[in-house]
Length: 377
Image (cartoon, rainbow, N blue to C red; front, side, top):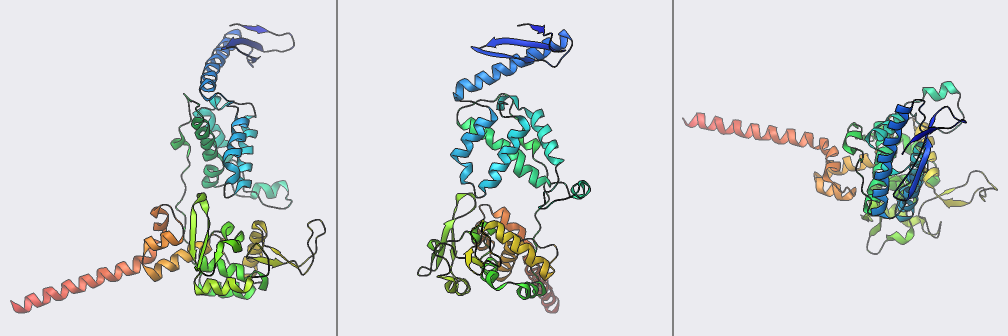
């Protein structure tokens, strides 16, 4: 091993072989001592990389691992477009040929800091000043779209047999997230939504509120998943889990009249404008899409004058009201398809009044008991 000068560059170059592989390039250093130190570091990285590759017997370049992960499972995620975007972001940051063995805790920490500096994306053209006025992405977004995606790549490579001697310390990289708030729809807000609702979107939003299912689960609901005979909706939900939801009289009243509007999908909308590029004809019905549903919701929310109410809050509203009526956390857990009861416990505050009433009843009972004892004595 040795470093050398190249007349075409102000920096020392390194060039060595290890395990039958050649490693070479610029040290980006102008002093020999610094260049030799850099070369020694590259040798250690080369050793780790070749060791991991010998075990996994496949490329550990981040682009190659991401490609294998995509073909294996990521393309089947509940939101494959988001998975594709998040993987592409990591590849763009590190570079296609960067090996996972080169991504240690410090490099992952730099990635997290970089992602935290991003701002929330919004559609439409904006000036530089308007872009800078947008809020920074949340800690939850950084965790879901960056740190956990990188962790998933490492986990996938390890499942293939790779060994990492300097894997990032994931628990130290996950940013703290505030406890998710629970927002309930008020009566006047519900009335405002009904007043502003477009007729063709009415059944969809009625179903959202009656089922507590997630946006994507509602949008993509197919007739093949609805069985009026057994009074069940059976489908695959978040995390690939089988979801069974009862077709209650209220749900039946929403879905039954929609039969015949579309052969495959339950929810449709009427095209207000024609679009030759998309093949849309004004006045005809088309299946509701995820993007279309989000756009419709944004317009509906603005027309109804709702503040601080997200689409996902319909699910919170459902869970809150169901727990208030039933008083049964396990039932709500099953209805919302929560894997962990901890997710359901966020709704437990609705039972506070019941707890207070029970405590008060117990206090009054003890008070009466003590009074009787005094009278006897």
